[in-house]
Amino acid sequence: MKKEKTFSEHLLKAIVVAIGVALFGAVFVVAAFKDLYAGYVALFVFGSLFFGTIFFYFIYIFFRSIQKLKWFFGSITVLGSIIIIATCNLDIYFKNLFNNTSLPPEYNEYQDLESKAVLQFKNKKMRLLLDCDKDLEQYMTIQNNLIVGASDCKLLNEGRISGKIYYKFDSLGNITAKYKPSESDEIFLKDI
Image (cartoon, rainbow, N blue to C red):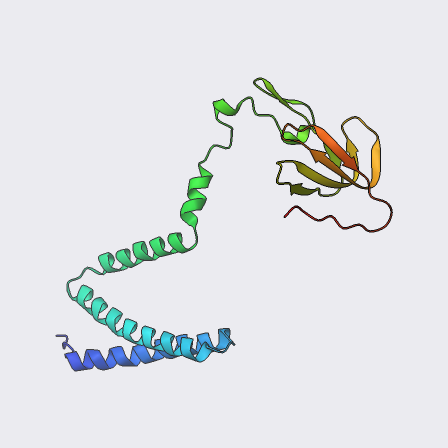
């Protein structure tokens, strides 16, 4: 006949196991993290693992006494899986795995802006005004005019312009002014 352990024997065994697990976790934290707060984190990990192991031990003893260890480990597996899925963004991965990458039918007439052709939108046309190798500088004036500073660019069907040049466009995209600075360094100040 098997002798049943008393509560104090179970508690002593749980404390010994908890100290071992908690020390291992604290040593791992101190070895892995070399910053200013590693000691505090190790103390927190030690306390959490110590009390968590004791709690886990008594829950394990309870499920073993009612012979439902499969339920116990099954629930731990399910809970662990949910935590892993939530923290690793696996839910987003699985959602994106089944997404359809084709465009919906209402976007079949989509025109790529990189094509550099004239784009037609119902009764409006959109065409490229400047073709530049470098990024454009853009300034909006108080009168709702756009000033664009460009370097080494091509305007519409004109030849390539070397050096810095400024274009002033009205709200409809028409060029109202053009300025090419001299070779000296000039500073462009925005409206105030």
